[in-house]
Length: 229
View 1 (spheres, helix red, strand yellow):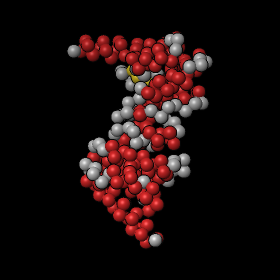
View 2 (cartoon, one colour):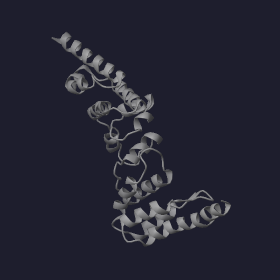
View 3 (cartoon, one colour):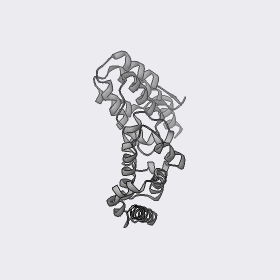
View 4 (cartoon, helix red, strand yellow):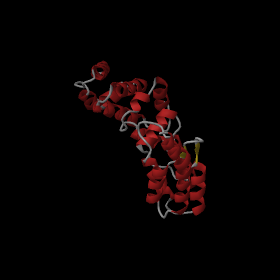
């Protein structure tokens, strides 16, 4: 076992990271470079140092036209259920070199909610927020307030997305996060009336709290409309 550890940590890991940099400097296209980086990694195990800066420098010096495509391919490789700080930093630094925002991938949505730092446009990330499983569990009261108070984010999009996500169902922790967002949005009587069909669809939701919220909002909307007439 000690021999195997030596071979894996002392011999291979530094060389794999060196291969990562070499591949970034020599391979012919975005697809091959993305696969190469994912295969060989960005961090040397023994010293816990990364080669992100070297990879960025190698790619920047090549002045290739496919760098933007590489950024998107790497962003698509970010995990959607945990943070990968090295790959995330590589995506952000390469995007800064190109001046083009990367795709709002599942992994970038997760890292935005997990860290509070958007690595691409917040509006694009917010639109995808309701499609990525697991991020609801990361939403807190403070996060909900940030989302609803962000001038870059469309309120109707947030409300419709929230109802869509509640309708999809899922784990209780996820659902609770989007219920916090719905509460922070505090929809008006007119907004509930406009989305009455979406609220009605929640009445039979398997999560009793979701169904109760929908029932309360529909009753409040009808009472408000009746009071006006």
